Image 1: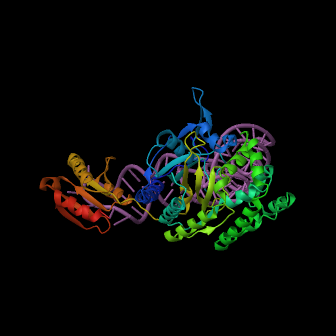
Image 2: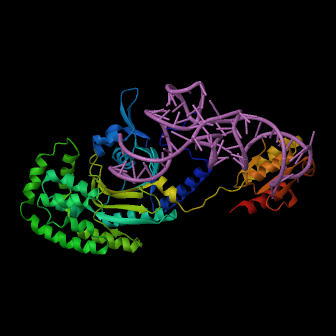
Image 3: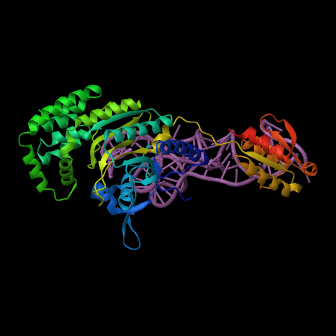
Length: 452
RNA sequence: GCCGGGGUAGGGUAGCUGGUCAUCCUUUGGGACUGUGGAUCCCAUGACCCGGGUUCGAAUCCCGGCUCCGGCCCCA
């Protein structure tokens, strides 16, 4: 038995690596042009970073371990938390806004299936320091631009947590987690049942999440007005009561706390509406969809997800929104907006056909090996394509055969005759035509013919 | 964690109602062809996922494990 790859990991053969590199470079080129700067963080972090962000239950899903010094560490399951940790550690006093992008491998201990691996790559960006619609629109437009650049057509769904959270304040705190869960899981029947049970079916929640697109926004405005009228009643009192029971024992407690913290700005639908208009300016098409709640607590308002066709169950290729994480990680509270793209999922459906450049082969008669190696050296300095030379001790014919099988565009043939004349023979591998050239002309001609 | 379907040379496959040397294609290395490739021919390398069980005998049947694929859950 040979040694196998660990479960859920992949090997990337030269062809795969080339394709991945090409798509990555394309995306990073766009990020740079939008003024985002690349950063990198460690592959592993203190476990606490991730439990602080997502709660202790995350430990079940990640690679967590103790090192030899007894420290609790974890392979990063995502990159937003490390990036914000880096921000809190060393970038808090940098001029705002900060535009950052990253690309890195992440790890989760999950059952592998299509589009889901134990080691996977995420590419993302964070705009730190603003949660204005301007910032959100830029980030969302950027995300769609990146996905487009790979030839993948994505379907952008744009949500806003404010209204739903406003509605949540109208129902008992103890019922909120389960209601949120039903929304997230798209359990319509259970949701309707639950709302009726707790006497909250008049809020318009089920109606809201069913609406999509332009009409959803208009209707949301009306619902917000109704809600504002209702909240003049007992709501503030209840809010207070909630905060008193917010000892951070688990997800439920956190949920209530953060919902309330964001209360002041929650119902600001004008903000959301402005974002929708700005996105139109960017030419980014979005479907308004209040069903997107992205279960994560630190999102404060705008959230979005992008789906792609042709991926089966794992069709989400991008997720993001506006969040407050710096405070949670011990820094001064800062609003940021960002997204992560599932790079592997993009690669499964990417429409680009990128191929490595064809190499040039130096083919020689054994007795002039030295001259051939020197020629190869010169060619490598002068050309932008791979230059390869025989290391198998093969004869001339076998070398040409090899050149052909690796797809060489040209062969530079060197024998005693050429050495004597100070020239080399250039053979076009597709046509078989040959010409004798001096060193300088050889490089000039080849450069011209091989550069794209 | 749960539910299905698979695992035979590097890749793709036949065999799988148990019994000669496990089939064929391709790839790789060598040769026919020591100054000219793509063709052809010859040679070589190379596999029954692992462990038990049933049997005179297991690639084949049974059980367990590992792993891959698809779905659930969760997410990227």
